[in-house]
Amino acid sequence: MLLFLIRRLADGLLTMAALLTLTFFVMRLAPGGPFSSNRKISPTIRANVEAAYNLDQPLVAQYLRYVRGVLQFDFGPSFRYRDYTVADILLNGLPFSLTIGLWAALVATVTGVTLGILGALKRNSLLDYSTGTIAVIGIAIPIFVLAPLMQVYFAVMLRWFPVGGWNDGWRSLVLPVVALALPNIAYISRLTRNSMIETMRENYVRTARAKGIGRGRVIRDHALTGAILPVVAYLGPATAAIITGSIVIETIFALPGIGRHFVDAALNRDYPLVMGITILYGFVLITFNIGADILRGWLDPRVRHD
Amino acid sequence: MTDSLLSVRDLSVTFRLPEGEVTAVDRLGFDVAPGEVLGIVGESGSGKSQILFSLMGLLAPNGRASGQALFAGQDLLAMTDTELDRVRGVSMAMIFQDPMTSLNPYKRVGDQLAEGLVVHKGLSWRAARAEAVRMLDRVRIPDAASRARRYPHEFSGGMRQRVMIAMALLVNPRLLLADEPTTALDVTIQSQIIDILAELARDMGTSIVFVTHDLGVVARLCDRVIVLYGGRIMEEAPADILFNAPRHPYAKGLLDTTPRIAAPLTRRLDIIPGTPRSGGAMLPGCPFAPRCASRIAACEAVQPPLIGIGPAHRTACHLIGEAP
Ligand SMILES: Nc1ncnc2c1ncn2[C@@H]1O[C@H](COP(=O)(O)OP(=O)(O)OP(=O)(O)O)[C@@H](O)[C@H]1O
Ligand SMILES: [Mg+2]
Image (cartoon, rainbow over all chains, first blue to last red; front, side):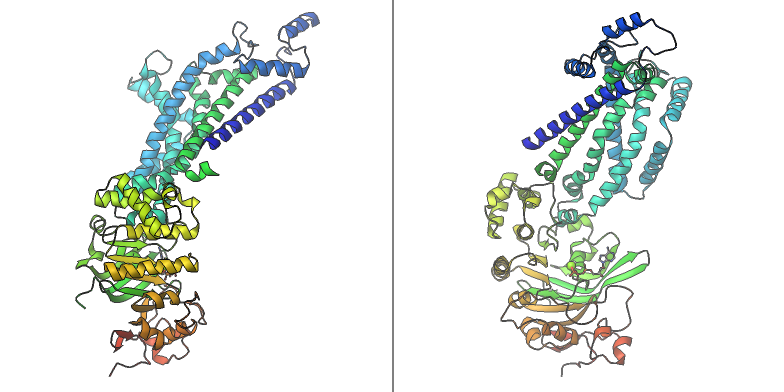
């Protein structure tokens, strides 16, 4: 298990390094710079500004400086928001994005797995059919349609929750979290249901039944592990995607997370901010993937032994 | 036979398929006395495993068993799952055919063995694991104590089969259903396992239904043998009688393809020309008729009844008359 952990961590670090390098060079090689706007700037000013941001140095030197900075969580100043460093912007937004994302992931997992297992055990029951229908709807309707509908109904008409913003305690959380979780509830419940049905057909589940230990134990102690393994594998990237993919949700619900900076930054060629966000997202993705791998290794001896 | 532990009557197993219903086992009857070893032989697809599954209540969801199977006086086929759970894993245990997929890959082998003792006998996990190690030792798993803490994928096929055997023996059942338990084992180990099973039947009075392809093993272990074809009994006889004087053309063909009892060699049965009939639509006649060299017109039209032709000797063939 220790070897398995070390290998996964090493993999993660390597991926991270590759991501860092790739982002840096792609951004630098992209045509245009932060100051190539329509406005003419005198060459002297331009030179001064470029010097201030170290843009006049050789690429390799810039790269090394950048890597050194990143290791200290220093992505330099933002090109756009001159008074803030990228680290400030990220640290300000991160708590919001993380809070919504983690809650949504938790809600999606618990609800999705529960519905999936119940559906599999009571196949073709009313519950199974209704979950199936909801799942199809949840997968088919995009979030930017669903979220405004929820706002209209639950916030404007029923006034249960605020339309947006972050000033209402846990109430502010409900709608964005549910909107973010819904498509994943749908997907996870389908995934769980199918894998549970498949697992119940496994020979080793039959062996367990032959032991006369009762249906409850057969399901809990024998079928469950195999059934949730595919879900765990999906959960790593999915959680990362939920956290980083909240761009739309943060915009719709006017939340001060990181997501909404991303598009702006890219449009403004705010190199440091784009790279900061990319690297942060990469870090989140890799971390959750490693987390899921470790969980998988813990559940499945064949994973941790090979 | 009133003193039998297991008494099966009219057992049929059918499967629902999109194309219609198929019959895998067709109105079968047999008895097993305490301490008796009954062999069931027959080609692949003849319904051997389904007989055992139906007794254990483990048929696939699209399968259904009808008839009667009295085990110690209670009808297994009429029991609910909960009622069956008081019998299977307690007084009736099964060794499954496919050792590679029949063990839970996510649980330690020792725990999978111990589980039954914890649930049914109220043993502590510690005590149950110790029992498990003892049983693994008994089925010749080397270094059983440390092996018990390992996972199935760390075992070879032969060792997994021995684990399956240990799992079934551990609860000390009155009836053991063994589905080709020795096929993955090398000759020495196989021989040791056969000795263990024979000893169990002799000393503990355990009844065994032993399904196999291997006629050499049948000759060594079984008291009585059923020859199955297409879900029907072709011939049933005490082992020595069947081996020395088989009557049914299918049984004769089967035994011709096997060396004499003296050399318990692993030879396969599937050497009779033609392909085994698999449980499609039931034809009116004898299932073996299409492959039978001595068939007459009646064979394809009328199913021959199973008739007694000697003490404990029955066969189903139009060419063989009733015992005088
Ligand atoms: N779930 C199922 N649905 C339909 N048919 C099935 C199902 N399970 C088994 N059968 C059929 O039942 C018949 C008997 O199968 P069974 O497993 O008892 O054979 P067997 O004698 O044990 O063969 P083998 O020696 O290969 O193990 C086969 O023709 C098989 O196709
Ligand atoms: Mg079989």
